[in-house]
Length: 183
Picture 1 (cartoon, rainbow, N blue to C red):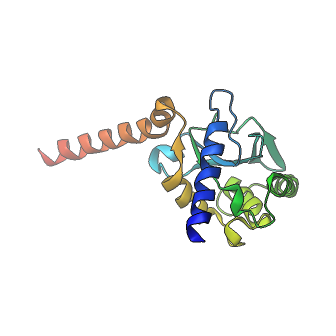
Picture 2 (picture 1 turned 135 degrees about the vertical axis):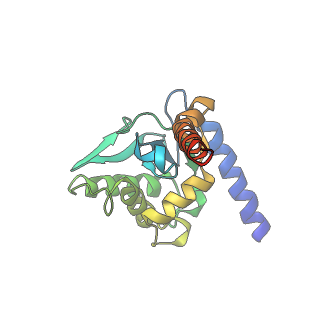
């Protein structure tokens, strides 16, 4: 029985992967992520997050009382994490889309707070509403960690946009530290 569930999960993953189209900005059943200038340069696991509908339309809590559609606050996604539609409690794309819609409508009435109620919280609410993975304990911390681990870069350019500023900054810090220690 567990093997059947694993096979179904892999089948869903491959079907979703076939529908992901970074060129056109479509990421069905995905969480998408993009770096936040300066903040991500210092902490590359922190960035801006959105969740996509079954057709791949990106919804992100972009600022106070505003949830954008297909126009992420800090640019096009550089990473995406494909979720398994079979892990939605009520099953199906309708349950997924309803949860994304309801979370977005709720966040249209909320003040944005960088530390406590932000884009990660919006995505967590959508996952909690759909009871993704039979859980209602999604939060910004576990989403940050899991997206960092499971997220795939959309392209080589996406990888560079995410990591190059951090690597350059670390290079400068390392150069300064070595210069000061060699005196």
